[in-house]
Length: 219
Image (cartoon, rainbow, N blue to C red):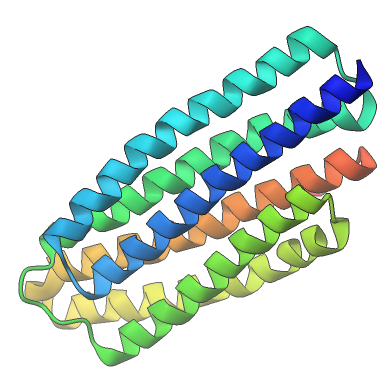
């Protein structure tokens, strides 16, 4: 029974890794679309999101099947619970990528200021690094990397608030650019939310390995 359970868990890990890779790629495309609007890329992002949604359902079904058939306990049970929660976070990140790309239709002919582009690039790099590290931590059940994700969240929050203040000043000074600024603000907020979802995944990894709940200052 244990051997069969391990095979099912290994297959689940591969499927989860594939799902996460698709979401990461779509997020990267969305950020590129904000900086270089492309209607064709927007449609690609939407098509990939449909694939992400289907795979998310498959992952959930696999988790429920394993729970029903094998009645796992201890770390295996906590891992499955964490994957179910990860599944929800990953699907929401996929939705954020679609929202970011969809907002580019409001850009018109407005060019992104260099300072905004530079700040957005840094925020995107930091939030994507958090996401990648959180996924690696869960795949490898590594609490050291998971705690590094938690530490990185403050930096992402700081960058978001700096960029948000910059964009609000721009909107006040150039009301005619409000649609473009809204798009950039949405992209910035979505990247900050990616950091939040990465934090959730990292917290669930710590729970999986140590059985410790650290949300809300618990643990």
